Image 1 (tube, helix red, strand yellow):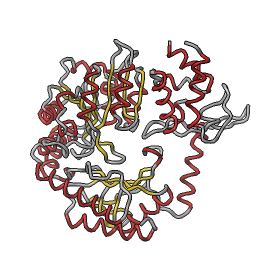
Image 2: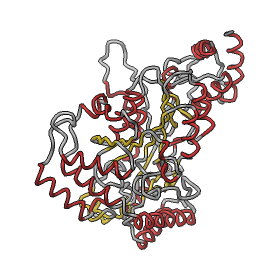
Image 3: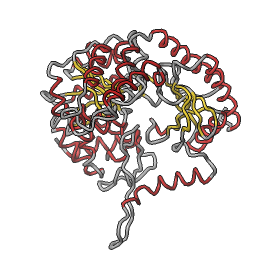
Length: 79
Length: 422
């Protein structure tokens, strides 16, 4: 599946969650740069799962540290 | 990414130490933020909420704590079986007849007639074919979940699940997929997206112990069934109390027959220690050979299984106690609400009533004020709580008298005004 399309859609999805208006690049980290709490992570993951009709298991989430890795993972999961 | 998920009881990774190259890294540096938080709290003169000693236990509902006679409202001793004369006598007899401990695994030298008797009592209590007793409730979840869901299987679980459920997931090799607390639609979406042919286990709790709310098991179990998933329900906080026969929330909502595995504990309504799983699965007995937290630990002492078996059989006939406990729960809930406290549920749903505190500092102050009034409740704080709440968790007992519930309300009023919570 097209990575650019995935990225564009996630760019839109992340906006309401980026409350601190961090300038997000492919290297932005969720824990370090965005400082999201657990509820925000859960809601954001659910939003992505619903948008693409996929599952991102906790096991897969553990491998995702940066925004770029998230886009790669979602692109892969879309098949 | 999941490192930011520190939902209830899920293990929370702590920030690492910033050691300069060449420095020996103190493995304890990762605990520094917690050490500091504790030091700050205690430095302000706060009595340590996590280091209380009961010098004397007078009854299921009263003890001497720090020299003060204290009403216990945070013990999970829902049915007050800890001092039941028949239960105590059974324990004493077993201690005399079988000794202090088994010194062995259930699969080697650690199965005595008492272990078979308590499993028979559980089978009868739940009306299920198989019962397997573990040394603690924690080990029951750890063992069953990690063993039945293997590589390539999916575990779909509520995000507010107990630590023992999360640890069971972490110990196994299945894909772990959490959904928003009690959200039927979120659960169904995840089940629908699981690849065809994969094994599926849905893990739910009857009563969630932090807020004392119950799960919509009727709907959730039906959805799980529709998607071909097996269902495990942890009824730790409902056994003995909820449901016509005290079998729990699944029984109360009429779906116990559709639940594959019920997990429970002896350390709440039963009044001692131990854990169990009951099931009608025809191949269930193989668990005794493949479940490592069952095999690689010593079995419960003879006195413990004897007290548990006696208590479980008495709980089958405890309809009046159940009714009195519901009265207590309703009365405390209405009273606290009337005083202006914010509670975890709009209506009482279980024997747990959670009082929401504005923050940890004021929660700890309120906890201490209550203790000085002569009342013990549980202080629950993040990350064990949902949405980072600080809670004063009250768990009622069937042995609390009407008069004591009245005293408890007076203590809450006095402590609440003293600390400015109400």
